[in-house]
Image (cartoon, rainbow, N blue to C red; front, side):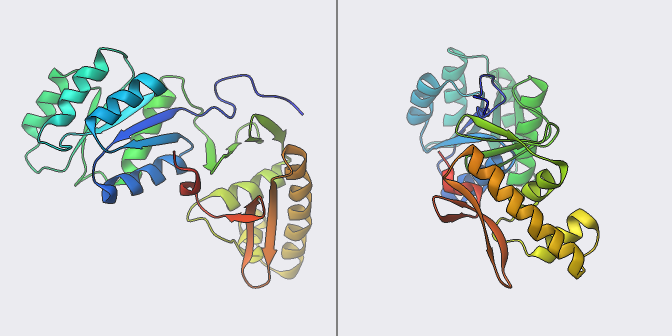
Length: 249
């Protein structure tokens, strides 16, 4: 079993979100986790700057208005004194022109409006930024602490990896993809074999058993559970690993 030692393997880029509204930060952090990145949420500018110093994130997502109007821009100035990491400014205001200009003046990297860029769009934008900087591979999935490199068909967990067969990688990818929860055998069969008849479902069950063995080689904490009429999901320490938010920082 190989122990990981490079920046892509089990050490995904960290995104620091500074947003004081939970209704905004929760869906955004979930979207970022599902794109294969780690994230940490801060509610205030003071906390954001403290975590910037302590964690040295790979990228920042900062709301313009935190506890007071324009406070996000002040935070950008402070962050810029300690790092050149990309900073994405977010605003929910309809009057964007002044904010966009200030974002440039304060040395933010990019600017998006939350009213036109939902969390999934923001997360995708962040991912592309990190890929362009060489901080992230373009084709990977994350569920909790598990990461699947789809190009290399390698599954990572707690600093260890396992190379999967093409079929096992496909099953693993399907189980990791949103919206999470259990995935029926018929869905897996249709995805992998373009057919959901009985023979395809039986083949899926065989591959799932092989996936269980592969997971056990990575960690005894990981497994796959199947329930009749409900389907399969990953288990971590015996509990269903249903969505990425379980391990939000």
